[in-house]
Image (cartoon, rainbow, N blue to C red; front, side, top):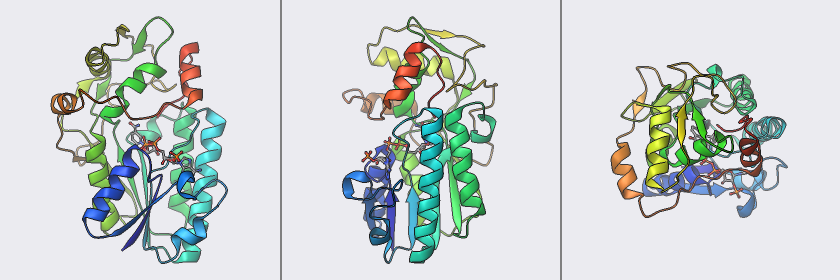
Length: 273
Ligand SMILES: NC(=O)c1ccc[n+]([C@@H]2O[C@H](COP(=O)([O-])OP(=O)(O)OC[C@H]3O[C@@H](n4cnc5c(N)ncnc54)[C@H](OP(=O)(O)O)[C@@H]3O)[C@@H](O)[C@H]2O)c1
């Protein structure tokens, strides 16, 4: 099958392109630096010619509320329109476990808007809800840093390796549309503050992580179970300690858009995913 990976140069996208190719598919990475821009529509008609499946693992370059909303609404509308013209049979999108419980956050309102467009569209779809990536732990610290300390609720947390996210997304992209949401998560549960503290220690980052029940996650109040998937979630294999060991010599690869970093240092923490 010809499978287009929107955001195919990103953290998840680049792994996904490799995995789909290993399965013998013609996987094409689509992103602005490969000549495809979902915001403007540039390159979409060309890249979608002959494609059976589109997997959207793109992300907004800015996590500021309005920018994220514009990105996910405009990109998704463009994608669905061009996919219908090209005869695409399956649209897969990557979103986040608990998205509907996080609507206090502008970023998550944008993800909800993305999902609503997909559900009300004409292309058969699968929406993958993943928990936070291990690779994202440092960025969680960054968006939760008030200039002195990293403040996080001690809610339950079940993150997973980006590699396992890509494997699950590949499996779902190669299967039939589920017309609903598939939840995926990590094999172990932790406390959010505890795991971010462990990650910072491993990076020799001296910022202190404080458990603070009033602190927000990406601008949203969260409860004990907000970030954890349901009992039917498909779980990745990679355990945190093993991932930490194997990534010890590598810098974290997930990106922090400038708006998020700027907001975080002001302590507002309204951006993130
Ligand atoms: N972080 C988490 O823990 C987490 C958890 C669950 C779900 N998710 C979801 O996972 C998805 C992917 O995250 P990620 O960390 O892999 O993202 P990422 O590494 O930041 O990659 C984003 C990709 O989107 C592309 N992109 C940006 N603007 C575009 C445009 N106008 N047209 C086409 N492509 C564009 C980027 O291309 P360039 O590099 O050329 O800009 C890049 O390939 C997001 O939708 C996020 O909501 C994240």
